[in-house]
Length: 182
Image 1 (cartoon, rainbow, N blue to C red):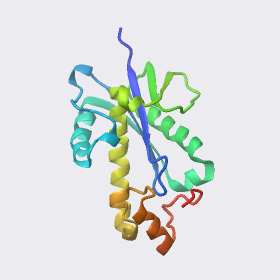
Image 2 (cartoon, rainbow, N blue to C red):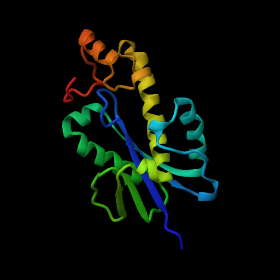
Image 3 (spheres, rainbow, N blue to C red):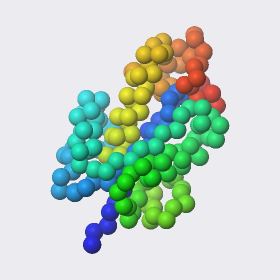
């Protein structure tokens, strides 16, 4: 009997503002996997929007999210573990093997395999990266309506030149990670 593989990836680990989002993806049938899935960093926003719907329609999805204030309290490593655990628990599909992009270490009853650059080599991890990025990007676009001077609709909370300038001019918000160097 084939093993049920769950791919996991995170988005937002290095951002100055916004949450860390983790997604887990288990495809229902690999013969119906949407074509052209690849690492979210190698796709456009329009492509992610289109492929997100296809992934949701063909896979079991789980998500985890940790806000900036929690990241500040416990650190990014613990926050990432929490978000990964939330993602695994919220994904209702049984899982035989969990493939995690990167070197996140978990205590789990599942067989876990850490894969460096997994989003480039495993379709379930690449799909998880797209789901996580789509969700986080939409959070940042909504937050940009509350705080337009930071241009989060464009930079998604990362330390771009315009974001750093806005921090210098206006200070930080409750949505910024206060423990990060800016």
